[in-house]
Length: 355
Length: 143
Image (cartoon, rainbow over all chains, first blue to last red; front, side, top):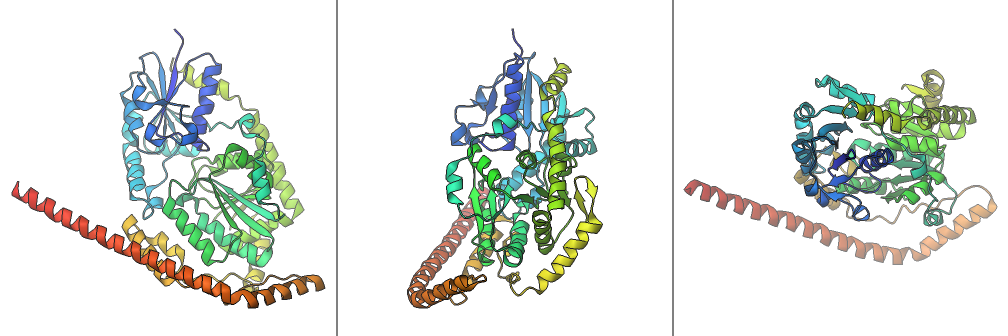
């Protein structure tokens, strides 16, 4: 009988980092000859992902199998995972501190608080823990975890290099300087800081510019409303809230981008940084959480900056050829490291500890 | 401000350039005008519960219900053609402003109706919740 490595997820959506990680993991496991299915809470499956996972209640593991749970929020998937007789692997994607969501969504605050409260209990009940970054691993070790391996988020250039969506190009025919942010619209991303920095950049430095904000607003619609109100009160029609983008759409946005900018305060790893580096877009990121690790010496990182300072930093990166060149060279080096990674070998070694 | 470029600390050089640039920007006549924190959307960040957020939102919508059409900004660059184009746009704005103001007035009325409806809804829900809670307390008390 062949081996099985199943995954149970809290939700499944196209463009979501955890869903993408689960799909990539499934491909590697299947390529190795083992069987692998993804089980997900059907209440939290986006329409485009319907049929690509099995309903959570249909999961029934066997003692010789392995089950993986991607942990970032409290959900019914946690209990299904813990009840499984299979060997259990907890993949820790980090839990966004609940305080960021306070005021925007009491329900999400509750789920994040519950996830953090249960973390120690869940860790104690599993056979091993994999963290997607050293930053996450350190957090788990500080909570007393001993058996933590680091298995960074998978980046697949083949899955990412798609034909760009021509409709996006048609939408932005006027050639302006495009500043890009990609990520779900959540309060920990501090998109308001980005908008305020753009207000300075657009008004004082470069009128022919736009800020493209690409990412789903579904996890915090009240935060999204606040951002739209802010862009309106600053009289910035060139702040483009593009919301969710298909993989082809995303490819087009990276093609349009002159720089990728993020003022995010909390990230477990931040895959869009890797995507930007891959597409040779200079990255400007705040030195927080797992982002220095994802950049791995590439791009430009800054500590706290006022909106004016961030605007000026963007201007320097776009106008000083030496600075931009240095950033792009460092990013190319980092991408060589990432692309030469033997993810299948790493996964095999980690699974071998459990079989 | 610490700046790291390609893994190298460049706070001195790049940071110095940023500081000089910021000084120039702050003196610029087109520097953005930030709304006072009481009236800004950023006031919503201060809410600690969903209910507090909703109350602040209603408050903000009330304070920001008027659309001003006076400070219409006509962008213009350098050169004779660009200046003439800007003048034409400015003239068109003067001609069309009356119609625009009519539409803005109608939109403001709709916004006000929406805000009021939202307020009534919140009030009604709060009243219903209070009533249900009182009935529940009474039943639990009897049991």
